Length: 139
Image (cartoon, rainbow, N blue to C red; front, top):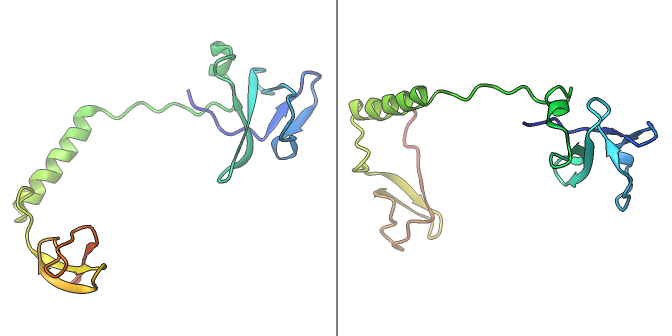
């Protein structure tokens, strides 16, 4: 089960507590206001401060009906993904591409600033890590 990030938790006495005001060193237990399961305080650089359900201490039956639960989508069928891969591989072969034998292209070696035609290994410094494709024309 996956859940949304929770911005407000509830204390034991029923007061709401915002995650952005929650003290870093606080050990006050917080609970979800919808399913009453325990929450854990988290802080990250990308997402800031938030609470999330403590899945080890939570009641599974209450988690299933929680308002913060993300609806679970059925997994994609494996036959659909395999057929799309098969179509992509076969489609590439019909257009003249051979996946086993790469065709020569125009490359630029960023390490030695040399532009060359051929495979990805630079003909001047013999390095293939710093070569990138150069677009010669727009199709």
